[in-house]
Image (tube, rainbow, N blue to C red; front, side):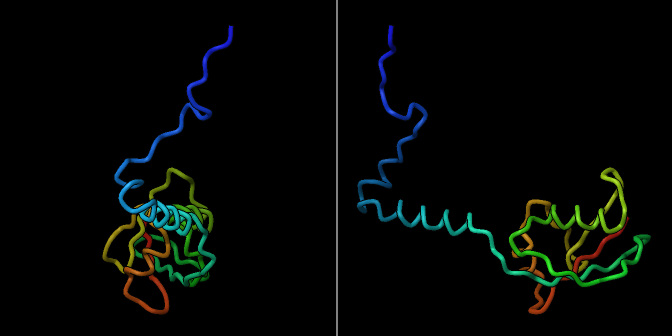
Length: 126
């Protein structure tokens, strides 16, 4: 016995009526364009300067080019690898000694708020 089909996509959601009726889908089109722009990987690189604070070891190289679309979590993982630290070892990072960024912040956003036109400074300590 075959089950009746109600729609070709059983899990599809309908858009709110305010998005589809008032402007002929113009807002929907703009929203989709914005989403596509957000999904694109930014291949631009930003220069990040790492400086040791407290008991953190001094790195051999202080300046690195990092892809702007990376999350800060990737920077934290990179620092752990460069320093030879394990996942559980404490690592505290700060932008311009002003605030500690969230791991899900993008490098591009942190670069914008750092206030520098040439590079962003990230400080680390243990």
